[in-house]
Amino acid sequence: MECGCSVEIGVLGPLSVRVAGQQVEVGSGRLRAALAMLASEVGRTVSVERLAQAVWGEELPAHVRNSTQTQITRLRRLLGGARIRTECDGYRLDVAPEHVDAVRFGRLLHEAQTAPTAGEQRRLLTEALQLWRGRPFEGVGSQWLDEVESERIVELYLSAREHRVDLELAAGRHGAVVAELRELTARFPLREAFWAQLLKALKQSGRPAEALACYESVRVLLADELGADPSPDLKRQYAELLSAKAVPQQLPAARGVFVGRAQQLKALDEAIDSTAVVLHGSGGIGKTALPLQWAQQHQQLFPDGQLFIDLQGYGPGELIDAASALKSFLIGLGVPEHQIPYDVEARSSLLRTTLAGRRCLLLLDNAFDADHVRPLIPGPGSLALVTSRNELHGLAIREGAPRIAVDELKASESIELLHTKTGATDQQALRELAGLCGHVPLALSIAAVRCDGDITAIVDELRLKASAIGDLRAVFVRSYQALDPYAARAYAVEPT
Picture 1 (cartoon, one colour):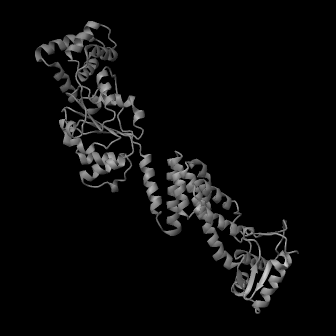
Picture 2 (cartoon, rainbow, N blue to C red):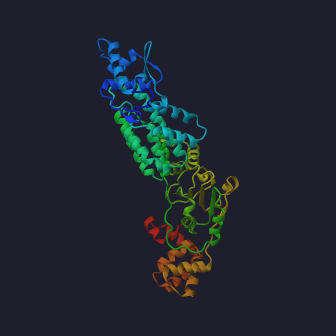
Picture 3 (cartoon, rainbow, N blue to C red):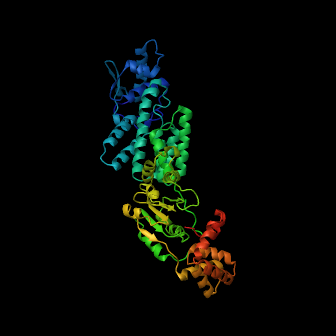
């Protein structure tokens, strides 16, 4: 065969040989091993000893040099006599390096490492990976090539796959690589870098539940196969997934009938960029119903969740201290309980850290004073609505919290509330009952329930009590506070 014929050799998969464009079958395993060894060192001299090791391993023939020469003679018949040169201490395959796929593969990877742009890196990596047909030297039957040279090339291949996936993720093509990464994690289950990339791709594709399931799969796999925990990178991504998935929705439903409060609702709209707002007013005035109504209308402004706690600053239960409230919030935000520090300052700092970059609403109901709620105030981005019977001047001074007074309803609003709850249409009776209740939402709600459809009778009864007591709303508040919690909810108006 003429030496001018082109020869192409592929070792990235089953051994492939083409001479002058025609596929050539390489018969015996020893002949394939000899050619594969020469191809892996194309352009360089391979000593007789190394060539013999690749062909026979530890079971060397009695006459190594003669047996090696026999293999070389047979290869020359296949490739052309001049393709394999005899050197002083071995043999050299004289084929253009770019005609051996493993050599071209390595050169493309090297060029990709130094390419100036991500686009050029991706092009070179893609071209290199297209040369891959399977495990190097497949079917050659050389223990040395399988255990040494093949492992080296496989590592280059896996690193190239990681690099290209990183480029895809950096370009925002998260969904496009999910299928590829599932295939890679199935083929190379102990390579944690692919699992980390899969978790990231799923998370950025809006599939956090699948990402969490993948983490559990690799955690169990590593424990069973290696008795080891996932890498720090995988653990970090898992923590981020838990945090991202924890979108608390703790606000109670806005219960019952809500009327009026246009001025206060507008004030809340205007305070949207604050970190805290104080809603203050007397007991039974509806301080909790107001922020619940506003929150329901503005859910889209707080996509990262809503937190709620009744601090019980005015009873009847025991006061909830800041440390307990912080722990409740942190657990609601997905922080594992064992990671929550003990002291209040550390918990407050962790709350702000956890909320950083997120947009959450916090409703701190029934605060006793400014010091009671100050540790619960979030950093920029989130908003705390604080209700209290006190004006909480301290929050206004130190935190710049706007204060919104919640007072009695207007006469028309009180009449609307009574009409909606009772169905009564007697405007005079409705107006008088609203006045007797002092236009206080709690008193109005209790009166509406007690009238049992006969609004005139309840007006007469309350008119008598009002003349005897003076401040009728106190009667309703005391009546409400005497109820058990389940009965109190039937009035659908917050008592504070």
